[in-house]
Image (cartoon, rainbow, N blue to C red; front, side, top):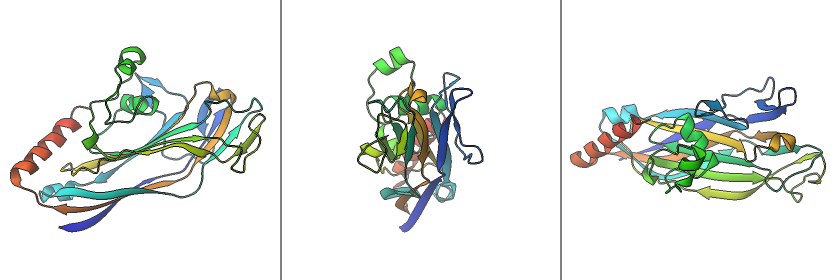
Length: 244
């Protein structure tokens, strides 16, 4: 048994509404490695995501399984909002999902996850039948690390009044972890940070937001497991990776 520390890093995101084209964009000169996802081939305005990977192929070559003890996150700064002179609506806010998965996510999965329910849970069929969402076929074991957050403006955290134009620092309304920390024999972990302004009308309300740099740390160890269990785990990881 050998202890390991695995790390996924995400840059800060500085976003604003482009008033000329009435779409969200990254600040000029502050572009990070985020892009706008597509749902059924159409860009989703107000959504951004970054992705990276953690290479486990060396462990797989040695027939080692990775076991996770715990996961946690670190932030490199603070969240910030600015809003228009229309003031803040009850729905104004920023949804955020941070996911480390043993299987990759498609753009459709990414939009569906941030707009509906966290991956690995039993999803209400109405989302797929009426909304055209594709949440994937994940169960909890695939989501090594999962964190859902909802950031909303608050007048009690050093912010301007919410009924006029202003800026301030949001607070958490939701701060939910759903990490499985299940062992994996996969050759790669897929890491995502997804952000979405949670109301399609917010281009007239929320005008800017900042999400600080984020780091996810996985405390783990590698070890051999019985041959049959390892081969079953390995086969399952390949099967799921090829479904996307």
